[in-house]
Image (cartoon, rainbow, N blue to C red; front, side, top):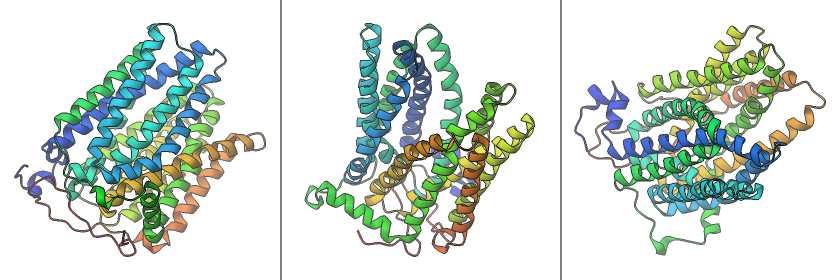
Length: 439
């Protein structure tokens, strides 16, 4: 690929170094376009569902069907990703989602859409997403050298937050005339993402030989055994799932309720969400220009503790200005945690099992979220929303503090790799103590 000096270029500007990797630039650029379409689509979906069922009961059912589809497909998706290059799975997912959303556009343009159509759409979309998520999570080691993975994740995170900020208002503007316009934009965005992937060329991951393949359940069991025997990995996934359940589930459900009861509540909520996104952009931009973290496990736990505390102070703050400062900090902590977490998995988990590890991680998160929301709904009748969310944030802080005492997570270290790779070949990274598990 390129023969740049990593000390003068890669270390000073992660963006310049990564853009020279054509596959990364085109693939991530395409996925940013599809994320723009997704953000616009969510707004259009809300208006379209209200058009079909004015009571508003349709939209939760659509999301429920999407979540069920993802849970059903995600484990099998991880096995598929480990059998083939992520490129094949990501491309297939983009084309299938293009077709699914295009069919929805045709139904609405022809005034033939029914409520059950949206529910079926949610289910199909979730199933396809269940294969896309582990595939895209496993793609980074195939796109860039190991020493650039952290920066690649950071730049992707910044881009995703920026297009989300742009996509949601765009979806609102399109929906003012016709919600179908937002659907059409999303469909085209998936097609463009697929084109970007094709233009990026082949990825270097060798396909698993057919003779080496076992039954899908057997290969899934191998992935589960890998996670179980690697103490640092199983503990890290558990801590991440706890953070999602206790902190981020409340951020989506309890925080809007709390802020809505304050003067100018909707405006305050919008400003808090915007401040959180800006915090994530700032933190991601900083990590994009920083060298590899030597103690990523410790940084991940600190980010979880800081995020939990910042969200608690958003609730405790009586001043909107102070709440926005803490929302900025919460967004920064969220971005740092997600970037570091993804980098740990992509650097330390062998590529031949990375898809299954990603799927197990996703299953834990998505399966527990409905449970968390059900518990929140039950407790809201007994405990005020602000107090309930403060309890959740406190649990997040306690879990992060306790995990800091657990050496397999705290002492995770990034291996030193050759910073002058001759091509975009993935570099095999030795796993930390406790992570070297035979497949």
